[in-house]
Length: 370
Image (cartoon, rainbow, N blue to C red; front, side, top):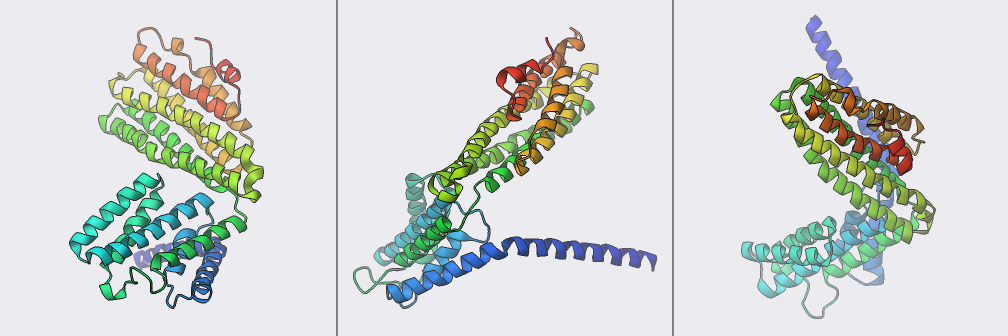
């Protein structure tokens, strides 16, 4: 009975957590989904009553694909998604009319559509939606296709209408481009802090498995920083195009500079993670591990600062203390492996101090003299 009671409590706690998290997702998505749903209905009305298409089901499909259920709706991303979807529908529709339907036709059509989309632009949404819609249209029976010449609108024109409605929504509905870049900054700082912490563990234990985990975590961070860079570009584009976001251009430009600095710090930490397996355990490696652990805490604090727009003064004070203790000479001349790691770490400390607002000279001055 006691064990059943405990199990019931665990299940109840998990159920309450699930309901709470689900309710939070619904609250956050309510307004964006309502806006997207209205855009879907409006796209259908415009295609049907203004342009006379009897069954314009691709117009609301395009509107939903462009807007989705999140509030992160940069004009560039909406336009790329709409262009990819429209091109995929157009390519699939006319490829099916010209060459028929079947497995071979789908293979060729999807390959050609995605290759053309990759040539036209670098956006992932452009290529993904081009391939998806081409496969859908080539896979449809011939009787469901619109005529090649004359006879009304093709389905790709419905997608154009849905895309244009979505772009208008992205222009009209106020959007804060800082939200996406702040989330990316937090993710970048989180993965850097994890790499620092895992590298410290590998140095302390000297176990190859721990050191390999740290190196793998460092390598996997490239995708996160690539996404951060793309988000920064989209946010700056939004601030240039959208009137309501132009006032944030200064902060977004500073955020891009911070991204570059944190990316540079991440590269230095990857070097330390790669050298860790070749560094014999000693008092020096314990000191390096301690510095890495303390820096991980500072980086987590920086992620919170960047995601909330808070002043990073307290984080800079933490980095200043770490820089004062990063002294290669304190280890001893014999332990040159650990000394080399601290020299690399000092470079990362300078980059992170600059990311917190210090000038290059101030960041270098916070380091203890060699």
